[in-house]
Structures are given as structure tokens and as C-alpha cells.
Length: 190
Length: 190
DNA sequence: CGGATTTGCCTAAATGGATTAGGCAAATGC
DNA sequence: GCATTTGCCTAATCCATTTAGGCAAATCCG
Image (tube, rainbow over all chains, first blue to last red; front, side):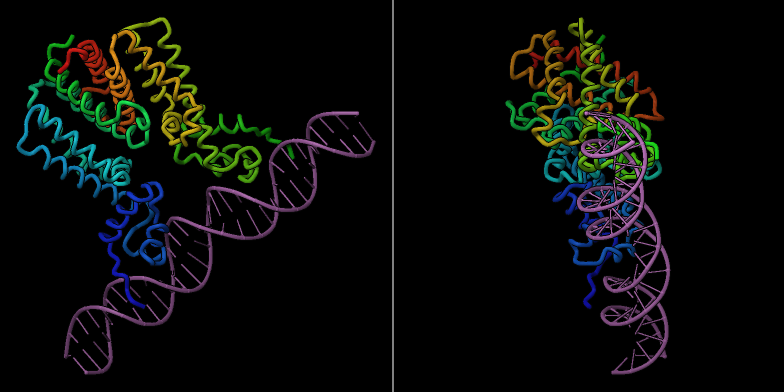
């Protein structure tokens, strides 16, 4: 019997691909084993359990997403940075819907604190440097951007905007323009 | 053996309560049967399958949410209506996290088209009447509001804002102020 | 190179959820 | 009161998760 060369890392990578193809919810040890031509029980030398698999996929998705955003934002400021951030985020979600769903998998607090989620928060604040907001307004802005980006992309990937004009891309562009305007005027908002 | 008095409607109601207590994901026929002191198989005279249970809970959650929003928006206009809409939405989610999760359960297109989801869209447009936006800007605004409301509340209920100052309520208020400003100035935005 | 050890995937088995088929008793109609 | 209907039950199947233990391939070491 030829060995399949399983490893935790390989399983997580294969799991991430599987998630993009069949959905994160459906990405289970049994499916993954089928895909790899291996018995389900064999995965348990490399994974603690099904939850562990999902958590690991979530963590790598968060890393990938942070890497993309980080690369996009580097060397940009102001509206430029805002748009680059937003597009990197959305493009990742559209290219990798399963991984994107994974990135929203609820992590227990310690795991979350050690995840790339904190990089996201830092990068959002970095983008906002271009808008010169004082606390606590800056925190509100971080939360606004997080809400809009994730909310829009979740609705879009769930098919919420499909088959209706204008297309999602157009709304996205307009919304980013609007956010830029809002952030520039926010300090003086009543 | 005394009969339990099961009915589709009763199961869905009990399922919605269960979802608020243990989470929508965990709301399965087996859990529901345990909760009702009944064998799992007995549910299948009233429900087609597990997916059917979740779909029905989702549909009632959408109705409830639409009812709340509808009552909140009635007799209000402009910023008043915007804030009433937003608060009705958020309050429902905070009071009924399981039902709120259910309301985001992916429905097949025909089911979605016959659901209260369309009432939500209509009510959002009604709120926007106070802002006098022309198409396609109005559609962009519908999508922006949907994104912010759902994005914010999902992040909040997932614990994204907990244990950090300022508290979520404050950000929510500021964000609504910001949206109001943005909507009033949007037509003239570059 | 060859034997010992480690490692890796396997088979076997327990547990539990989803689902279907068929039975029996309670409710209902007359 | 009896016949019919209805409703929940038992029984059984299938599939996913998870654990335990075995055997062979890879690796190590002399």
C-alpha cells in the first residue's frame, strides 16, 4: 500500500481548496478523506477532530487574507489605500468563497487573539491614518469599515445582489466613494 | 401514552426558541425532539427533513424581523425612520441571536422570493424616500444600508466588539449619524 | 546491507444523527 | 360503542465522527 503522504499542513491546504469547491460547511473529515483517497480515520493522526480541521482552515484563510490586504495597502494612503484594502478583501472573497466563509468561523478568544485577525484590525487603523480621525471616532470608523466590507461581501456572495441592476461592482465603487467622503467629513459631523 | 400535540407550527416555534438558546447551527431534529420529550422520528410526520426545519425557522424569523421593522418605521421619515429601522433590526438580533442567524440561512431562490425578505427591501426603499435619491443611487444606498446593518450586527453578535472601548452602542449611534450625513450629501458626491 | 524502530495508514468497532417503514394506541366521527 | 383516522412509537438503515489497535513501509543505525 503506497502511502498518501498526509500531513496536517497538507490536509489544511486540501481542506481549503475543498471549501472553495463545495463550501466551508460541507468541508468535513469524511469529504476530505474521500477527496484524498484515504480512509477517514487516517486523518485523525494529523487532526484532533472535525472542529480542529475547520479552525485550521479558518486560521490560514485569515492569514492569506491579511497577506493580500497588506500587500495591497503597502505604499498607499488616503482614499487610495481605502480602495486597495476594500478591493483586496472583496477579491479574495470572490475568488475563494469557501476560505472567506472559513475566515468568519467563530474562534475561541485565545485562538482569535493569536490569529491574523489582529493584523486586520491594525491594517484598518493604518488606512485610517490618512483620514486623521481622533479617538473614539477612529474606533467607530474601524467598525464601520469592517461592517461595510464584510456585510457587502457576505450579501454579494450569498447572491443577494444578483440578477438585479445595477451590478454589484457599481454599488461597490459608489459605496467606497461614499465612505471616503464620510470619513473626510466625519470629525465635523453632528 | 399521552400525545405531545406536535404540529409543524409548534415545532417551528420551539425550534426558534431552541435556536436562540443553543444557536441556529445546533438546532437539529434530534435536539428539538429531546427538548420536546419526543422521539426524533416523530418529527418527520410534520417536517420533511432537517433542512426543512431550518428553512421554516428562517422564514418565520424573516417575518418577525419584518414585522418589527415595519412597526418601527411606521409614521416616521428621514433620519428618524433610518434610526428606527436600524434599531429595530439590531434589537431583534440582540434579543434573538438564533433567529437572527436563521434569517441569514441561504434560501433557494423561489423560497426567498416568497419570503419576507422582499418586505425588507421595500422598507429600506421606503426609508430612503426621505433622502430623495435618484436611481441608480437609491439602489446603491439600499445595498449600503443592508451591508452596514447586517455587517455590524453580525460582528457585534459574534463578539467582535466586546471587551474594547468604546462600547458597541456608541459606535452604532455614530455610524447611524454618519450614514444619515452621507445619504443627505450623496447625490453631490463625486 | 539488514535488522530494529518508528511512522503512517489501515481495519474494526462504538456512538449518535438523519431518515424511512410499519405498528399500535389514542382521538374522533357516527 | 365501534370504525376510522391520526400521531407518536419501535425498528432498522445509512452515514459521519471518533478511538483503538494492527501491519507494512520508511527510516535509522550499526
